[in-house]
Length: 188
Ligand SMILES: [Zn+2]
Ligand SMILES: [Zn+2]
Image (cartoon, rainbow, N blue to C red; front, side):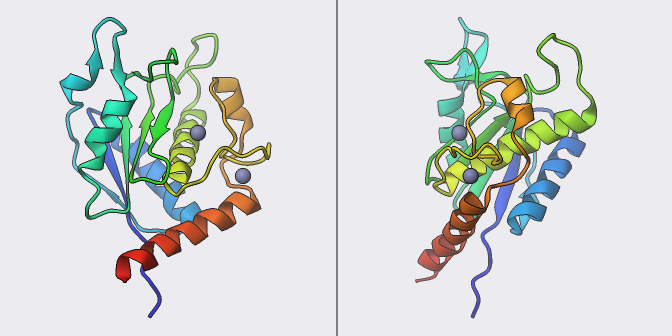
């Protein structure tokens, strides 16, 4: 019997436009060919706030998201608050390598490097790229040296705009294998 692909849960952390959730769900479903659910909005936990930085701790948020994992292979939190990790000024997303939780922040994705608003199309594409990149990490993918791959590391907006919204052949092959191998492991 062929294994059912695992389901990804998109969890809105705090207030977000429903359209951004649907667009990201559509991209994930279209590219990964796995079912995607959109969950009910959950408040951003206040204990993840870092007062002196006015930002939220991405590592603690990942830990929080993991709690929602039991019925899903991967939980992707999407939030509009600014997130960071100790050694960075900010991050666009974060994930548990080979784990269950991934996170995207839309906070810095709606503007260009001069602070001007970008079009909705650019904004949605950026959110989808960060989402797919972080989901790739959840399914054990590392950063990719291929310039034409969403797993290429990009810490800045111009870098993010340069990478495509798809995986290179090698990453896509590994990703699909991990998706189905994980499922098979659960069934035994
Ligand atoms: Zn990465
Ligand atoms: Zn790649």
